[in-house]
Amino acid sequence: MSGLLEQALAGHRPRPDHLDVAGSAAAATAADERAGLLRAVSYGTVRRVVGTELELTGLRLAVGDAVDVVSRDGARVAEVVAVADGACRALVLGGIDGIARGDRVRPRPGPLTSPIGDALLGRIVDALGNPLDGGPPIDAPRDRVDAPALHALERQRIAEPLATGVRLIDTLCTVGRGQRLGLFAGSGVGKSTLLAMMVRGTSASRSVIALVGERGREVREFVEDVLGPEGLARSTVVVATSDEPALLRLRAAVLATRIAEVYADDGHDVLLTVDSITRLATAQREIGLAAGEPPTSRGYPPSVFSLLPKLLERSGPRANGTVTAFYTVLVEGGDHDEPVADAARSILDGHLVLDRALTSQGRFPAIDPLQSLSRLATIVTSEEQQQVAATIRRGLAAAERVRDLVEVGAYVSGTDRIADAALAMEEQLTAFLAQAADEICPPPDAWERLAALANDLEQQAAGDGEVAA
Image 1 (cartoon, rainbow, N blue to C red):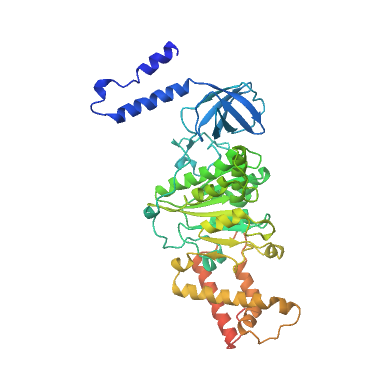
Image 2 (spheres, rainbow, N blue to C red; image 1 turned 120 degrees about the vertical axis):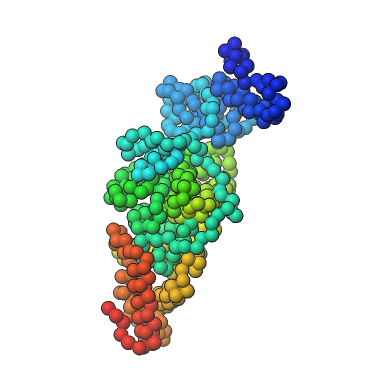
């Protein structure tokens, strides 16, 4: 050990006269400081580079530790994902070009941190919290992004609705403040547009948007055209495009969740949107397989299904504010029993199903109200509102039940009076369910319009009059 290191460590050795008061706490603190100094001057080496994975030796590291890999092109940050006998595996937060066997590795004194706070409002950042919008550096306290979910008994009860500005959601699938829902759909059916629409129309005071594994071309279009200046002004956008390493794609969702938690702890109602959970699971699959986990469920390792509840449970009601969250889930081919979709649905408090058939008819949002469900709708709506929504749902279900018969000419009018009324009012019902992407409808207006439709439907089914245009 060098003389310089000995001098540095000497100042951190606990003295006997200090132990009588602070006792073991002082000794533990001094030991931690000594360990930190030893780590700061210790070095390891890269033993092997395979794909995106590095095998490191010569250091005592734990899973989650950050290291700097010093190559010919400079230092790059990596994170330990697995530990084995005599070596550990790490993934680089960036490209691995230029990293060679024998390159020096030095541990970082602490975990990776990112700026967290009000300075992020209106900003677009990457998965590490660095600005992507060309603005000034973000002046905010730095903190770790991983945190445990709030204790179940420390959460508020969900008792009030949260406006989204979308008629169908605010009435037939009413969302509570602090509720978590999934948007289940295939690609290209308007998920991102619907999320941006809710960000602009929500009654939440702040929004946090995570774009996980998004196409690079679409990020600027989403921010400038879909979200717009008004939506961005009260939002924080965290971006990790599809070409970025798996660790960054995973970290983008975790960072967005942490930002939302801090906003909520400051007393705000926060709308958190993560697009998408499926790409997040794909990133964790890459990390798990690199760590040596076996693929157990359609190619997904066990860590994917332990990650989902840890992340999703962090949103929800908190002691001072709420985090209302929407997570998109890709269900290609309509397979809602796919492992990630099934796991997410079991954790979340409801689901909105976007139907490609409705998209092909030119309807937006393409939400199927009969397959969609909010598990807290009965808690955050009045009995009268519940009756109105139930009447409309009965009519839509009856019309859908006889639709095939109607199309082949086999349905006899009068067989089902509710179905007859719903079919006669199909144009008015569709006009209510559809909504332009730039149209924001306040919940009172939506409920008033839905109540009028429910009244007309009941009158038509009873044969008491003509349906209003």
